[in-house]
Image (cartoon, rainbow, N blue to C red; front, side, top):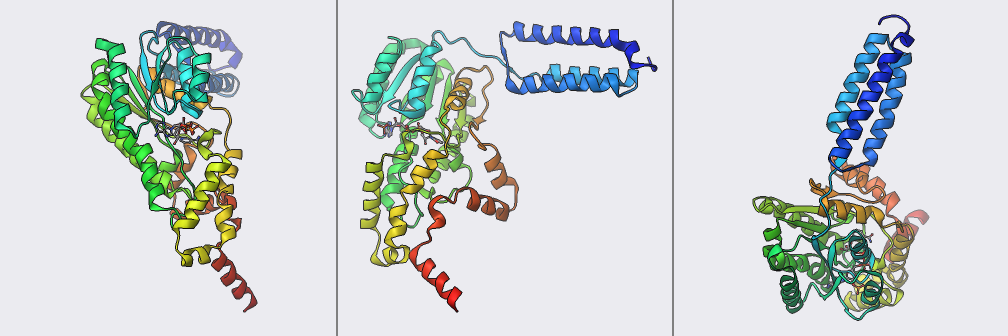
Length: 392
Ligand SMILES: NC(=O)c1ccc[n+]([C@@H]2O[C@H](COP(=O)([O-])OP(=O)(O)OC[C@H]3O[C@@H](n4cnc5c(N)ncnc54)[C@H](OP(=O)(O)O)[C@@H]3O)[C@@H](O)[C@H]2O)c1
Protein backbone atom coordinates (compact mmCIF):
# COMPACT_ATOMS: atom_id res chain seq x y z
CA UNK A 1 0.00 0.00 0.00
CA UNK A 2 2.93 2.41 0.51
CA UNK A 3 4.28 2.10 -3.06
CA UNK A 4 2.98 3.41 -6.38
CA UNK A 5 -0.52 4.95 -5.92
CA UNK A 6 -1.73 2.98 -8.92
CA UNK A 7 -1.36 -0.16 -6.75
CA UNK A 8 -4.47 1.00 -4.92
CA UNK A 9 -6.52 1.78 -8.02
CA UNK A 10 -8.87 -1.11 -7.28
CA UNK A 11 -9.37 0.17 -3.73
CA UNK A 12 -10.27 3.67 -4.99
CA UNK A 13 -12.67 2.24 -7.58
CA UNK A 14 -14.34 0.10 -4.93
CA UNK A 15 -14.55 3.01 -2.48
CA UNK A 16 -16.04 5.30 -5.14
CA UNK A 17 -18.64 2.67 -6.13
CA UNK A 18 -19.55 1.98 -2.51
CA UNK A 19 -19.82 5.68 -1.63
CA UNK A 20 -21.94 6.47 -4.73
CA UNK A 21 -24.24 3.56 -3.91
CA UNK A 22 -24.69 4.76 -0.32
CA UNK A 23 -25.47 8.35 -1.40
CA UNK A 24 -27.98 7.20 -4.05
CA UNK A 25 -29.58 4.85 -1.52
CA UNK A 26 -29.92 7.64 1.07
CA UNK A 27 -31.51 9.99 -1.49
CA UNK A 28 -33.88 7.32 -2.83
CA UNK A 29 -34.88 6.11 0.63
CA UNK A 30 -35.86 9.62 1.71
CA UNK A 31 -37.44 10.44 -1.68
CA UNK A 32 -35.44 13.67 -1.71
CA UNK A 33 -33.66 15.96 -4.11
CA UNK A 34 -29.96 16.68 -3.74
CA UNK A 35 -29.38 20.39 -2.99
CA UNK A 36 -26.96 22.70 -4.79
CA UNK A 37 -24.74 22.77 -1.71
CA UNK A 38 -24.46 18.98 -1.79
CA UNK A 39 -23.53 18.99 -5.48
CA UNK A 40 -20.68 21.37 -4.69
CA UNK A 41 -19.64 18.99 -1.91
CA UNK A 42 -19.69 16.07 -4.33
CA UNK A 43 -17.51 17.92 -6.85
CA UNK A 44 -15.05 18.83 -4.08
CA UNK A 45 -14.92 15.18 -3.01
CA UNK A 46 -14.04 14.11 -6.57
CA UNK A 47 -11.20 16.63 -6.62
CA UNK A 48 -10.03 15.41 -3.22
CA UNK A 49 -10.10 11.84 -4.50
CA UNK A 50 -7.80 12.75 -7.40
CA UNK A 51 -5.53 14.62 -5.02
CA UNK A 52 -5.38 11.67 -2.59
CA UNK A 53 -4.74 9.22 -5.42
CA UNK A 54 -1.94 11.12 -7.12
CA UNK A 55 -0.32 13.17 -4.35
CA UNK A 56 -0.54 11.43 -0.97
CA UNK A 57 1.17 8.17 -0.02
CA UNK A 58 -1.26 5.36 -0.88
CA UNK A 59 -2.48 4.43 2.62
CA UNK A 60 -2.70 8.02 3.90
CA UNK A 61 -4.57 9.10 0.73
CA UNK A 62 -7.10 6.26 1.08
CA UNK A 63 -7.72 7.06 4.76
CA UNK A 64 -8.24 10.79 4.06
CA UNK A 65 -10.64 9.94 1.24
CA UNK A 66 -12.63 7.49 3.40
CA UNK A 67 -12.95 10.04 6.23
CA UNK A 68 -14.08 12.77 3.79
CA UNK A 69 -16.70 10.44 2.25
CA UNK A 70 -18.01 9.47 5.70
CA UNK A 71 -18.31 13.12 6.75
CA UNK A 72 -20.11 14.00 3.51
CA UNK A 73 -22.53 11.12 3.90
CA UNK A 74 -23.43 12.03 7.48
CA UNK A 75 -23.85 15.75 6.71
CA UNK A 76 -25.63 15.25 3.35
CA UNK A 77 -28.23 18.04 3.50
CA UNK A 78 -31.18 16.41 1.85
CA UNK A 79 -34.40 18.25 1.03
CA UNK A 80 -36.94 16.03 2.60
CA UNK A 81 -40.29 17.44 1.51
CA UNK A 82 -43.75 16.64 2.80
CA UNK A 83 -46.40 15.57 0.27
CA UNK A 84 -48.36 18.54 -1.14
CA UNK A 85 -51.83 16.98 -1.70
CA UNK A 86 -54.24 18.04 1.02
CA UNK A 87 -52.06 20.95 2.13
CA UNK A 88 -53.93 24.26 2.37
CA UNK A 89 -52.08 27.59 2.48
CA UNK A 90 -53.25 31.20 2.84
CA UNK A 91 -51.03 33.74 1.07
CA UNK A 92 -51.73 37.44 1.65
CA UNK A 93 -51.09 40.18 -0.95
CA UNK A 94 -51.51 38.09 -4.11
CA UNK A 95 -52.49 40.98 -6.42
CA UNK A 96 -48.88 41.33 -7.62
CA UNK A 97 -45.22 40.55 -6.95
CA UNK A 98 -44.07 37.65 -4.77
CA UNK A 99 -47.58 36.85 -3.52
CA UNK A 100 -48.98 36.62 -7.03
CA UNK A 101 -46.09 34.46 -8.28
CA UNK A 102 -46.26 32.31 -5.14
CA UNK A 103 -49.99 31.64 -5.53
CA UNK A 104 -49.32 30.36 -9.07
CA UNK A 105 -46.26 28.35 -7.97
CA UNK A 106 -48.01 26.64 -5.04
CA UNK A 107 -51.07 25.93 -7.17
CA UNK A 108 -48.83 24.26 -9.77
CA UNK A 109 -47.27 22.12 -7.02
CA UNK A 110 -50.72 20.83 -6.01
CA UNK A 111 -51.18 22.95 -2.87
CA UNK A 112 -54.73 24.23 -2.22
CA UNK A 113 -54.16 27.99 -2.17
CA UNK A 114 -56.29 30.65 -0.51
CA UNK A 115 -55.02 33.72 -2.32
CA UNK A 116 -55.71 36.90 -0.35
CA UNK A 117 -56.16 39.90 -2.64
CA UNK A 118 -56.76 43.58 -2.00
CA UNK A 119 -59.10 43.76 -4.94
CA UNK A 120 -61.03 40.64 -5.91
CA UNK A 121 -61.92 42.19 -9.27
CA UNK A 122 -58.52 43.73 -9.96
CA UNK A 123 -56.11 42.62 -12.72
CA UNK A 124 -54.06 40.44 -10.35
CA UNK A 125 -57.12 38.48 -9.23
CA UNK A 126 -58.40 38.15 -12.81
CA UNK A 127 -55.01 36.77 -13.90
CA UNK A 128 -54.96 34.23 -11.04
CA UNK A 129 -58.45 33.06 -11.96
CA UNK A 130 -57.36 32.66 -15.59
CA UNK A 131 -53.98 31.00 -14.94
CA UNK A 132 -54.53 28.77 -11.91
CA UNK A 133 -56.47 25.57 -11.34
CA UNK A 134 -60.08 25.71 -10.16
CA UNK A 135 -58.84 24.65 -6.69
CA UNK A 136 -57.31 28.08 -6.04
CA UNK A 137 -59.67 30.19 -3.96
CA UNK A 138 -59.55 33.99 -4.11
CA UNK A 139 -60.17 35.69 -0.79
CA UNK A 140 -60.90 39.41 -0.39
CA UNK A 141 -58.37 40.42 2.27
CA UNK A 142 -57.07 43.83 3.23
CA UNK A 143 -54.85 42.91 6.18
CA UNK A 144 -55.55 46.27 7.85
CA UNK A 145 -59.30 45.66 7.83
CA UNK A 146 -60.48 43.60 10.80
CA UNK A 147 -63.88 42.96 9.14
CA UNK A 148 -62.20 41.43 6.09
CA UNK A 149 -59.85 39.35 8.27
CA UNK A 150 -62.86 37.97 10.16
CA UNK A 151 -64.77 37.24 6.92
CA UNK A 152 -61.69 35.53 5.40
CA UNK A 153 -61.38 33.40 8.53
CA UNK A 154 -65.05 32.34 8.36
CA UNK A 155 -64.71 31.39 4.70
CA UNK A 156 -61.47 29.44 5.12
CA UNK A 157 -62.65 27.75 8.33
CA UNK A 158 -65.79 26.63 6.54
CA UNK A 159 -63.72 25.13 3.71
CA UNK A 160 -60.95 23.41 5.69
CA UNK A 161 -63.20 22.23 8.54
CA UNK A 162 -61.52 19.81 10.96
CA UNK A 163 -58.26 19.43 9.02
CA UNK A 164 -57.20 23.00 9.83
CA UNK A 165 -55.08 25.27 7.68
CA UNK A 166 -51.55 24.04 6.94
CA UNK A 167 -49.78 27.34 6.30
CA UNK A 168 -49.98 31.12 6.26
CA UNK A 169 -47.59 33.24 4.22
CA UNK A 170 -47.63 36.82 5.50
CA UNK A 171 -46.60 38.41 2.25
CA UNK A 172 -48.74 41.58 1.94
CA UNK A 173 -46.55 44.61 2.46
CA UNK A 174 -45.75 48.13 1.32
CA UNK A 175 -42.49 49.98 0.93
CA UNK A 176 -44.21 53.33 1.15
CA UNK A 177 -41.70 56.02 0.31
CA UNK A 178 -37.93 55.89 0.71
CA UNK A 179 -36.48 59.21 1.85
CA UNK A 180 -34.44 60.72 4.69
CA UNK A 181 -36.20 59.80 7.95
CA UNK A 182 -36.54 63.49 8.84
CA UNK A 183 -38.64 64.16 5.75
CA UNK A 184 -41.16 61.34 6.07
CA UNK A 185 -44.46 62.45 7.62
CA UNK A 186 -45.48 60.52 10.74
CA UNK A 187 -48.51 59.29 8.78
CA UNK A 188 -46.13 57.40 6.42
CA UNK A 189 -44.53 55.60 9.37
CA UNK A 190 -47.96 54.73 10.75
CA UNK A 191 -49.28 53.45 7.43
CA UNK A 192 -46.26 51.18 6.89
CA UNK A 193 -46.59 49.82 10.41
CA UNK A 194 -50.32 49.30 9.89
CA UNK A 195 -49.81 47.03 6.85
CA UNK A 196 -46.40 45.43 7.42
CA UNK A 197 -46.66 44.80 11.14
CA UNK A 198 -50.15 45.18 12.63
CA UNK A 199 -51.65 43.50 9.53
CA UNK A 200 -49.53 40.43 10.26
CA UNK A 201 -50.39 40.47 13.97
CA UNK A 202 -54.13 40.72 13.19
CA UNK A 203 -54.12 37.88 10.64
CA UNK A 204 -51.92 35.68 12.87
CA UNK A 205 -54.17 36.09 15.90
CA UNK A 206 -57.29 35.28 13.90
CA UNK A 207 -55.90 32.21 12.07
CA UNK A 208 -53.67 30.59 14.68
CA UNK A 209 -56.37 28.24 16.00
CA UNK A 210 -56.56 26.71 12.49
CA UNK A 211 -52.77 26.43 12.26
CA UNK A 212 -52.42 24.87 15.70
CA UNK A 213 -54.97 22.25 14.70
CA UNK A 214 -52.80 21.13 11.76
CA UNK A 215 -49.44 21.74 13.53
CA UNK A 216 -48.64 23.75 10.42
CA UNK A 217 -46.37 26.55 9.26
CA UNK A 218 -46.23 30.33 9.64
CA UNK A 219 -44.03 32.16 7.13
CA UNK A 220 -43.35 35.90 7.31
CA UNK A 221 -41.95 37.95 4.45
CA UNK A 222 -39.43 40.16 6.23
CA UNK A 223 -36.62 41.97 4.42
CA UNK A 224 -32.88 42.52 4.25
CA UNK A 225 -33.79 46.10 5.18
CA UNK A 226 -35.07 44.90 8.56
CA UNK A 227 -31.69 43.30 9.37
CA UNK A 228 -29.28 46.13 8.59
CA UNK A 229 -29.64 49.91 8.11
CA UNK A 230 -30.17 51.14 4.55
CA UNK A 231 -30.34 54.93 4.08
CA UNK A 232 -33.82 56.20 3.24
CA UNK A 233 -35.59 53.16 4.71
CA UNK A 234 -36.35 54.45 8.22
CA UNK A 235 -40.10 53.74 8.03
CA UNK A 236 -40.03 50.48 6.06
CA UNK A 237 -37.02 48.99 7.87
CA UNK A 238 -38.55 49.67 11.29
CA UNK A 239 -41.67 47.68 10.31
CA UNK A 240 -39.61 44.77 9.00
CA UNK A 241 -37.36 44.70 12.07
CA UNK A 242 -40.50 44.58 14.21
CA UNK A 243 -41.94 41.80 12.04
CA UNK A 244 -38.70 39.85 12.25
CA UNK A 245 -38.64 39.93 16.04
CA UNK A 246 -42.37 39.25 16.31
CA UNK A 247 -41.89 36.14 14.16
CA UNK A 248 -38.84 35.00 16.13
CA UNK A 249 -40.78 35.25 19.40
CA UNK A 250 -43.77 33.48 17.85
CA UNK A 251 -41.40 30.70 16.79
CA UNK A 252 -40.57 30.15 20.45
CA UNK A 253 -44.18 30.52 21.64
CA UNK A 254 -45.52 28.07 19.07
CA UNK A 255 -42.90 25.34 19.54
CA UNK A 256 -45.09 23.66 22.14
CA UNK A 257 -47.96 23.50 19.63
CA UNK A 258 -45.81 21.96 16.90
CA UNK A 259 -46.28 25.00 14.63
CA UNK A 260 -43.03 25.99 12.86
CA UNK A 261 -42.28 29.62 12.05
CA UNK A 262 -39.87 30.83 9.38
CA UNK A 263 -38.86 34.25 8.13
CA UNK A 264 -37.78 35.18 4.61
CA UNK A 265 -35.34 38.10 4.21
CA UNK A 266 -35.05 38.88 0.49
CA UNK A 267 -32.75 41.49 -1.02
CA UNK A 268 -33.97 43.49 -4.05
CA UNK A 269 -36.41 41.93 -6.54
CA UNK A 270 -38.31 43.63 -9.36
CA UNK A 271 -41.93 43.82 -8.23
CA UNK A 272 -44.57 46.55 -7.89
CA UNK A 273 -43.23 47.46 -4.47
CA UNK A 274 -41.18 50.37 -5.82
CA UNK A 275 -44.39 52.20 -6.80
CA UNK A 276 -45.75 53.80 -9.95
CA UNK A 277 -44.70 57.30 -11.09
CA UNK A 278 -48.15 58.62 -10.15
CA UNK A 279 -47.92 57.19 -6.64
CA UNK A 280 -44.41 58.54 -6.13
CA UNK A 281 -45.37 62.01 -7.33
CA UNK A 282 -48.33 62.09 -4.96
CA UNK A 283 -46.07 61.02 -2.06
CA UNK A 284 -43.52 63.72 -2.93
CA UNK A 285 -46.34 66.25 -2.85
CA UNK A 286 -47.41 65.02 0.60
CA UNK A 287 -43.84 65.42 1.85
CA UNK A 288 -43.64 68.96 0.48
CA UNK A 289 -46.90 69.81 2.24
CA UNK A 290 -45.85 68.27 5.57
CA UNK A 291 -42.39 69.74 6.12
CA UNK A 292 -41.77 73.15 7.67
CA UNK A 293 -40.42 76.03 5.51
CA UNK A 294 -37.06 75.76 7.34
CA UNK A 295 -36.66 72.08 6.46
CA UNK A 296 -37.74 72.76 2.87
CA UNK A 297 -35.14 75.52 2.63
CA UNK A 298 -32.38 73.31 4.10
CA UNK A 299 -33.02 70.39 1.73
CA UNK A 300 -33.99 72.41 -1.36
CA UNK A 301 -36.72 71.54 -3.85
CA UNK A 302 -34.36 69.86 -6.35
CA UNK A 303 -33.23 67.38 -3.68
CA UNK A 304 -36.83 66.70 -2.60
CA UNK A 305 -38.06 66.14 -6.15
CA UNK A 306 -35.09 63.87 -6.95
CA UNK A 307 -36.06 61.57 -4.07
CA UNK A 308 -38.44 59.59 -6.22
CA UNK A 309 -35.58 58.66 -8.58
CA UNK A 310 -34.30 56.46 -5.75
CA UNK A 311 -37.22 54.10 -6.32
CA UNK A 312 -36.47 53.87 -10.02
CA UNK A 313 -32.79 53.14 -9.33
CA UNK A 314 -33.67 50.47 -6.78
CA UNK A 315 -36.02 48.89 -9.30
CA UNK A 316 -33.42 48.80 -12.09
CA UNK A 317 -30.72 47.28 -9.87
CA UNK A 318 -33.04 44.56 -8.53
CA UNK A 319 -33.27 40.99 -9.77
CA UNK A 320 -36.14 40.00 -12.06
CA UNK A 321 -35.92 36.27 -11.25
CA UNK A 322 -38.26 35.73 -8.29
CA UNK A 323 -37.59 31.97 -8.11
CA UNK A 324 -35.12 32.06 -5.16
CA UNK A 325 -37.87 33.62 -3.01
CA UNK A 326 -40.54 31.17 -4.22
CA UNK A 327 -38.30 28.16 -3.57
CA UNK A 328 -37.41 29.34 -0.08
CA UNK A 329 -41.06 29.94 0.84
CA UNK A 330 -41.91 26.50 -0.54
CA UNK A 331 -39.15 24.97 1.60
CA UNK A 332 -40.38 26.84 4.68
CA UNK A 333 -43.90 25.53 4.07
CA UNK A 334 -43.22 21.95 3.08
CA UNK A 335 -39.75 20.77 4.10
CA UNK A 336 -39.87 18.27 6.94
CA UNK A 337 -37.24 20.40 8.68
CA UNK A 338 -37.73 24.05 7.61
CA UNK A 339 -35.07 26.64 8.47
CA UNK A 340 -35.93 29.43 10.94
CA UNK A 341 -34.82 32.01 8.35
CA UNK A 342 -33.97 32.26 4.66
CA UNK A 343 -32.02 34.95 2.79
CA UNK A 344 -32.83 34.76 -0.93
CA UNK A 345 -31.28 37.14 -3.44
CA UNK A 346 -27.99 38.85 -4.18
CA UNK A 347 -25.87 39.54 -1.04
CA UNK A 348 -28.92 38.92 1.18
CA UNK A 349 -26.80 36.88 3.59
CA UNK A 350 -23.54 38.77 3.22
CA UNK A 351 -24.76 42.35 3.93
CA UNK A 352 -26.36 41.63 7.35
CA UNK A 353 -23.19 39.69 8.32
CA UNK A 354 -21.11 42.73 7.40
CA UNK A 355 -23.34 44.86 9.62
CA UNK A 356 -23.36 42.44 12.58
CA UNK A 357 -19.81 41.17 12.71
CA UNK A 358 -17.63 44.04 11.46
CA UNK A 359 -16.78 47.46 12.96
CA UNK A 360 -19.46 50.02 12.08
CA UNK A 361 -17.07 52.05 9.91
CA UNK A 362 -16.67 49.02 7.59
CA UNK A 363 -20.44 48.72 7.16
CA UNK A 364 -20.90 52.51 6.83
CA UNK A 365 -18.26 52.69 4.06
CA UNK A 366 -19.88 49.77 2.25
CA UNK A 367 -23.37 51.26 2.69
CA UNK A 368 -22.28 54.67 1.38
CA UNK A 369 -20.84 53.11 -1.76
CA UNK A 370 -23.62 50.56 -2.33
CA UNK A 371 -26.78 52.43 -1.40
CA UNK A 372 -25.72 55.88 -2.56
CA UNK A 373 -28.34 56.16 -5.34
CA UNK A 374 -29.60 59.74 -5.74
CA UNK A 375 -27.46 60.98 -2.90
CA UNK A 376 -25.05 62.40 -5.47
CA UNK A 377 -27.35 65.42 -4.97
CA UNK A 378 -26.73 66.95 -1.57
CA UNK A 379 -29.33 68.93 0.39
CA UNK A 380 -29.18 72.61 -0.58
CA UNK A 381 -27.62 73.98 2.64
CA UNK A 382 -24.87 71.32 2.61
CA UNK A 383 -24.03 72.26 -0.97
CA UNK A 384 -23.78 75.93 0.02
CA UNK A 385 -21.58 75.24 3.06
CA UNK A 386 -19.34 72.91 0.99
CA UNK A 387 -18.94 75.63 -1.65
CA UNK A 388 -18.15 78.20 1.05
CA UNK A 389 -15.49 75.90 2.53
CA UNK A 390 -13.90 75.50 -0.92
CA UNK A 391 -13.71 79.26 -1.52
CA UNK A 392 -12.31 80.00 2.00
N1 LIG B 1 -39.49 43.24 -3.85
C1 LIG B 1 -38.50 43.28 -2.99
O1 LIG B 1 -37.36 43.60 -3.36
C2 LIG B 1 -38.72 42.88 -1.56
C3 LIG B 1 -37.60 42.72 -0.74
C4 LIG B 1 -37.77 42.36 0.57
C5 LIG B 1 -39.03 42.13 1.07
N2 LIG B 1 -40.12 42.30 0.27
C6 LIG B 1 -41.45 42.04 0.85
O2 LIG B 1 -42.15 41.12 0.05
C7 LIG B 1 -43.54 41.30 0.23
C8 LIG B 1 -44.22 41.34 -1.12
O3 LIG B 1 -43.80 42.51 -1.79
P1 LIG B 1 -43.55 42.58 -3.35
O4 LIG B 1 -42.15 42.94 -3.55
O5 LIG B 1 -44.09 41.39 -4.02
O6 LIG B 1 -44.39 43.91 -3.70
P2 LIG B 1 -45.77 44.11 -4.43
O7 LIG B 1 -45.69 43.66 -5.84
O8 LIG B 1 -46.15 45.53 -4.18
O9 LIG B 1 -46.74 43.13 -3.63
C9 LIG B 1 -47.28 43.48 -2.38
C10 LIG B 1 -48.68 43.01 -2.37
O10 LIG B 1 -49.31 43.36 -1.11
C11 LIG B 1 -50.56 43.96 -1.42
N3 LIG B 1 -50.99 44.82 -0.35
C12 LIG B 1 -50.64 46.10 -0.07
N4 LIG B 1 -51.32 46.54 0.99
C13 LIG B 1 -52.10 45.52 1.40
C14 LIG B 1 -53.05 45.35 2.43
N5 LIG B 1 -53.34 46.34 3.27
N6 LIG B 1 -53.68 44.16 2.55
C15 LIG B 1 -53.43 43.17 1.70
N7 LIG B 1 -52.57 43.26 0.69
C16 LIG B 1 -51.92 44.42 0.54
C17 LIG B 1 -50.32 44.69 -2.72
O11 LIG B 1 -51.54 45.00 -3.36
P3 LIG B 1 -51.55 46.13 -4.50
O12 LIG B 1 -50.77 45.57 -5.63
O13 LIG B 1 -52.98 46.31 -4.83
O14 LIG B 1 -50.92 47.32 -3.86
C18 LIG B 1 -49.51 43.67 -3.46
O15 LIG B 1 -50.29 42.69 -4.04
C19 LIG B 1 -43.72 42.58 1.04
O16 LIG B 1 -43.97 42.25 2.38
C20 LIG B 1 -42.37 43.25 0.92
O17 LIG B 1 -42.08 44.07 2.01
C21 LIG B 1 -40.00 42.67 -1.04
